[in-house]
Image (tube, rainbow, N blue to C red; front, side, top):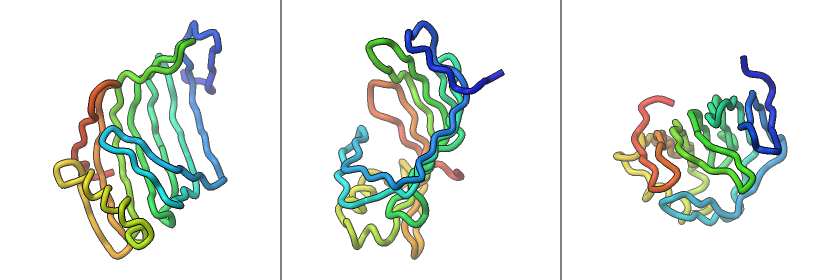
Length: 159
């Protein structure tokens, strides 16, 4: 049985339980660092943040991660698993396996062509299923890896 989220600040036990985190306020990032690159955003806002899932024994099952909406220049959705350990010295990521969908609006090409081109450079057909329409471009991919080293990106047929 999984209960509401419990966090032991003495770190004798790993956090456990369900979580449902959301922010009704818009979120802005100045930059986003990923193993392949560091992207500097110019005035990119995400209208919402939703993170739902549960954690037990260091395994986090993410049932929904939503950053932004279809109305934003970038819209990110993910689900999957992450293994972490919490200690007094910090949080350590062991491994991750996420299914992701990133939607780049056609407006972003006009607003910040460098970011739009960087996404095209980072994701090719060997790393993501890419579809394009008048509203923008969608990248669907599976990202998995260990804490050290480059993530493995593979195309994801369906999200």
